[in-house]
Length: 63
Image 1 (cartoon, helix red, strand yellow):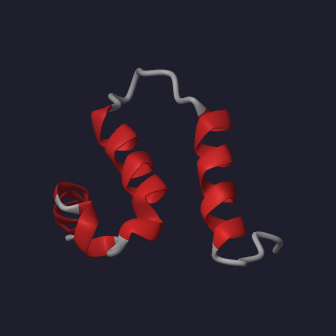
Image 2 (cartoon, rainbow, N blue to C red):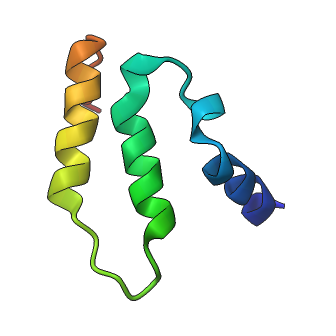
């Protein structure tokens, strides 16, 4: 069930993050879909992209 939902979301990221303001999130999702289990992740790039979106939308990432 969860795997099916995940696959559906990753097929069409535009429905998950509508609007141009979320283009960085589309890029992150696209990046993640291309990765295989053994691939090295660029966590610094992901972190930068998420912070950029949060800053532009005035969101706090602090827990």
